Image (cartoon, rainbow, N blue to C red; front, side, top):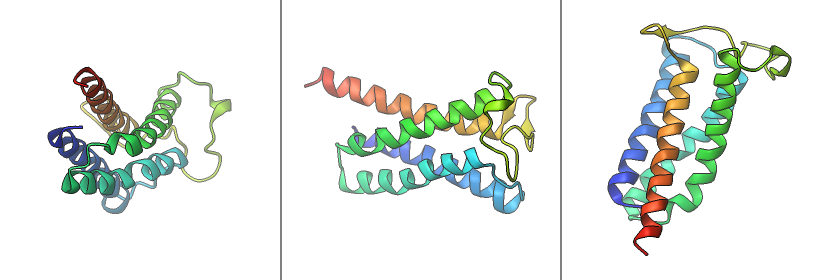
Length: 138
């Protein structure tokens, strides 16, 4: 993976991490259980991408792609649940904040779950692009 792609991935992960901390600690929106699982995937990526960038580790995809994929899958499920594509009987959020509760909407369609899905989608796209171009140049 090229250093520029590692740096870009780090910026996305830092932005998503700071955004989630802003919504929970400054705006005081309590995270739902699916948000917690997404945070478990996103927060370590900030450290892993920073270390990979500083050490010029071209093998960063080996240990970040599984975490990104898990986070993306949880985030996709969360969005399908949030926007009503999955029946509420499948909701794992029985205690605390509901995973479908509307806490923030901007521009009429941008929500917290959508922002998380966007971050994981960008990270996954960069990882797949980097993997494809790496194999092509071998």
